[in-house]
Structures are given as structure tokens and as C-alpha cells.
Image (cartoon, rainbow, N blue to C red; front, side, top):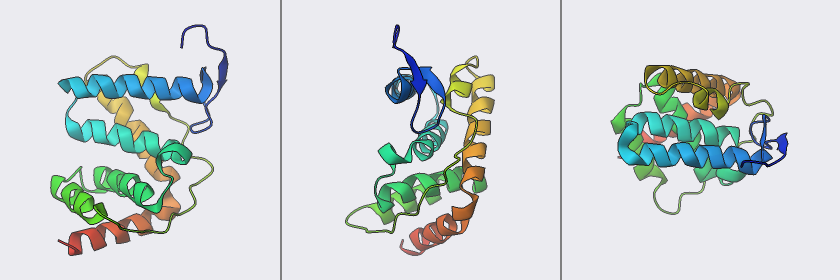
Length: 158
């Protein structure tokens, strides 16, 4: 987004060259890096869930997509990314499941993907990613019980 005017991202609220499209371009660049195998899947998933919950209009339009990211972040934060819980969630969401879409919080955390981008690769970047995701999870405190109920239902549906 070189040369693009700095504008506020409608999702996370930060000022970034290109506004929302510039923020999305940065996310896409990190995803491309992750797909090259440079980042373990649980960390990639953590980044995707945090970003999507900070940009819910674009990535959490339905109750189903909202549940995928909210419960994904729950699994990362409270169950150390448990692969079995992730598999249960994917299986539960597969098909024509209709879920009510909660209203997202207005404030979705001060940290953003920019905090991850600003760090060196490796351990420092992982720490920045985990701090960002933890802040996004705290921003959704009012929906923690909903996320836990959805995960319990997903685990019971096996």
C-alpha cells in the first residue's frame, strides 16, 4: 500500500496506509508467510481468529463464522489450542448449522496485527501474537459463556 493515504481501519480502528484495505493486505501477507510453513498451524489459527474477531463485519457475518472464530479463540486461550477441541468444533460447524450471531463488542482491543508485524520473527513475534489474541479474548468477555456453551455442544456432538 505504498503511497496510500493513512486512514482508520473500520475493524480494528488503527491508522494504517490504505485504511481497512491496507490492514487486510497486511493480514493477507502474514497468512501467505504462514502458508509457506514458517509458522505452526496453532499459531496461524490464533492469528486468524484474533484478526477476524477484530474485523467482525468482514469475517464474522454469520453466527456460524462468528462461532468458529470465537470458539477458536476460546480453545487457544483456555485449552492451549487442544487439537481435539478444534476438530470437534470443525465437525460441529460442518454442514447447515444455524447459530444466532451475537453482537460484537464495540471495543475489540487496543493491540492489533500491527503489534505482531512490528516484532522480529520467532519468539518475539509469537509473544506479540499471544498478547494480541489475549487482549481480543478479554474484549469479548461478555461472550465467554456463549463460547464455552458452543464448545461443550460441539464436544457432545461427536
